[in-house]
Amino acid sequence: MDYNDAMKRTPPGSDVVRLIRFAAILWIGYLIVLALISQSFPAPQRANLLYYVLLGCIALLCLGLAYWPWIQKRLRQAFVPVIVVVITIMPVIANWLMTRLSPFSPPFPPEGPVLGLLPFLFIALLLVAWQYRWQYILLIILGTTGLNLGVIWSFAEPGTPPFQGGLVITLIQSIIFLAVGFSISYLMSRLRGQQQSLEEANIRLTHYASTLVHLTTSRERNRLAWELHDTLAHTLSGLSVQLETVKAYWDVDQQTARSILEKSLVATHSGLEETRRALKALRASPLDDLGLAMATRNMVEETAARANLTLDLSIMDKVPTLSPDVEQCVYRVAQEAVTNVVKHANAKNLTVKLEFIEGKVTLIVGDDGVGFGIEKSSKTSHFGLTGMRERAQLLGGEFDVISEPGYGTTIQLTI
Image 1 (spheres, rainbow, N blue to C red):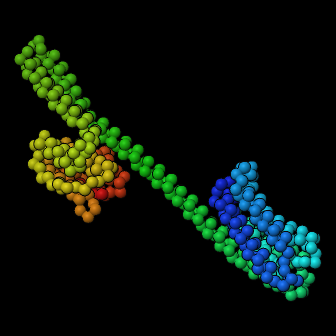
Image 2: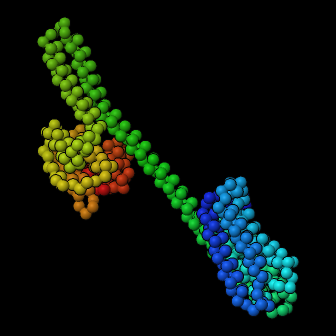
Image 3: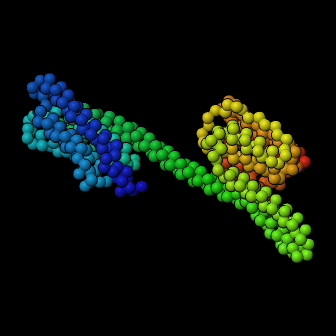
């Protein structure tokens, strides 16, 4: 990241502007306290109040810039560098002016000429450490050290106790600035890295969820295509063959033609019922009207009765209120599993259990049909099982299938 990229991190109106406002108010309070303390010194060591007024004007200038949206919009990315320059350079200029205006009256007590600049330089360090990389922190520390040395040089002769005291204060300040600046820079770097990692993880999670939704939708469409193929397409194709047969026999053997026509009508009514049932299954209205327990019970009982299956049904009478997506998942998985038993299992007995224990809803559907090999099935396009598994994965649930050829099939869904 170069310098321009770093400055773009601080657009006008961000948290750094609020920090500048808060810091400016603290500066003003600090200068007031420092001026009151200074007035308690004896007359020869008493600091000039005009110096505190100049520093207070600098603090007021920063406060005004922080509350002036127009100048922030005009400066844009240069707003923070301008503030840093103001709070580091202008106090030194104030020192120089006071030295020119009253060369015989030091603006500070001789033993502490750097104290007045300390809050300004510290806030400048915080701004740089918060916004920029460590190279700029080192630059601001070197700059503030040079400014302090210049201030000390203007107030005391080399070798004198005030000069040595100022050097000690400058050294301590530089060490503290290094520790604080690099600590803040390290923390901000870690925070930016964590934020970037969270953003990337969120993007990946969003893409993953979107992919699962699209896959589930695609599987659902394929399942519906097979459903309509097994009902409407089979009915129409069989009806077409039978009508062709009726046409061929009509002039030769009308009795046989009428018999085939009667069978065609029966097949038509049966196919129509199956098609209506398939289309009705696309709707989730039973859940809205009856709730999960009753809707599942009615669906299982109707399917088992239509297929002449012996039913062992166990559904809790009082299933807690679940979220709509969970109820939809459980109902659709139960519907798909029971439909597979009717179509493919060639079973005589059907077992369905729906229970809610210790915060988990569990659905079990079993049969005593022909079964199948799990490994062989996983290598083929078994849309029903794949769709049920994807529904469970979308909600963080578990979907298990237990089956062997000749020993039936059991599926279990747990959310």
